[in-house]
Length: 339
Image (tube, rainbow, N blue to C red; front, side, top):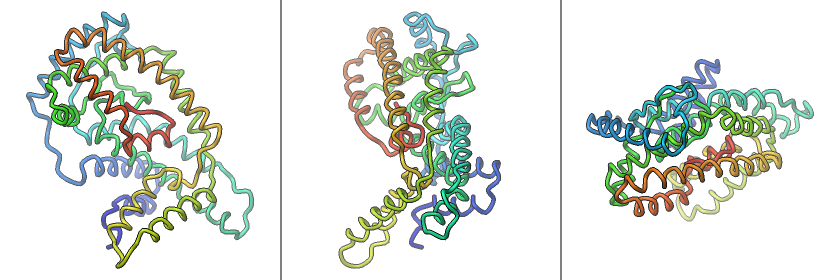
């Protein structure tokens, strides 16, 4: 099977067979789970990690409150920091993004074609409008699954969430600590401080509203542009064909197909508008201000608590400069930066 290594295609076909909203939501979550786990069994949270995170979160909450003077939740109740697996993080991300992905689907469904002729562009327009509820669900699940591979916590994806609990992906925290030869507890404490600081900032109503307003305006800016999608698809296929030297290599074609279906604009038959570019820049600026304030909180609260603070911040600076597929996906789909 040429596309055996591209599970997303099978999910598209299965979802199109039952495109009601409940089925789409379930399939989006399943796709996110599949990508998050790589199709392999996922180990449970280590009880020792759970205890360590709980203790460090209490320390972090006290110091964040002292520096910011803010409540960690909009209700004023304490925030619970809970360890989660990658698949659990992906599932909550899918749920949090569903109002936005539903909004994209409605916007594209309302995009009437300019003409009803048999012109290839008009036919493509009709097909994209028909498939888009399914394809938007695919995009949401793919984005959440990819982000779960590197996310430290819920606030890595700055969309509105209803729960006061904060999820921390302990496997990613442990992997990062091991990769950079850092003390695991140092990284756990840093993540707790950062998540609680971000959660506290986003619990301020006007801050949350200011970010949500821009994200919603961005997703409302999607327009069907099948011609642009066809051009991108043709360019990708041309690149695939030109790269073949000798016998046909199914693995190379699979890799190129993953690139095609990993681009939400090709998948949805859209292109980023000038208005969306401007909104993405405003979002970057607004989220950058929040990130700068959180960096201040981290320095004030963390420098005296974390023994290897300087080494940790240098490793984290390098992490921020990395550009992952999940981050690119979130930027193109929702206009947001991640991390």
